[in-house]
Image 1: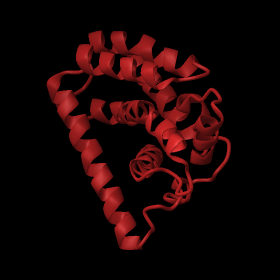
Image 2 (image 1 turned 45 degrees about the vertical axis):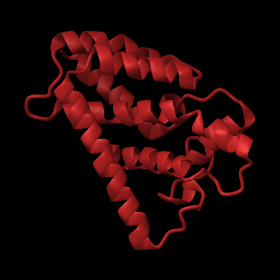
Image 3 (image 1 turned 180 degrees about the vertical axis):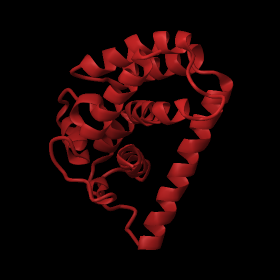
Image 4 (image 1 turned 135 degrees about the horizontal axis):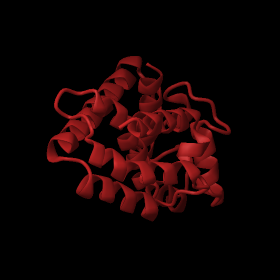
Length: 181
């Protein structure tokens, strides 16, 4: 459940960016936030890897675990995660580690979760231009979505795998899981 909430928070942040982020941003700031989409995509994908491993026929092999572990440990130790780096890491995972069946499961799950989040927002009557910190009741500040927006807006280093407690916990648990292979 904790991981689901973390993933939903990440998805809400992605949806907020898709809708332009906070409503009072200049076009330049919107562009800066949009540039961080690869980081959010990486967080969403990594957030699903432990659940993927539990799916019948989709569990990671020992060889996959050995390829993933250095990547995940690197994510855990970085002070900053730039969009270009996140894009390369995600491409490496998708192109060189995951199987087509694993990729299909991840893509379908992300699409399903985005649709469910959209439906919940519509059912709740939420304003799509509302700040993302309010989409999931997430605090605005260090470790919350507001921390992300503040860091990006100010050009400060930001690594969601260190700054967002749920993403950090999920990554730690995934590393522990794969280390046992």
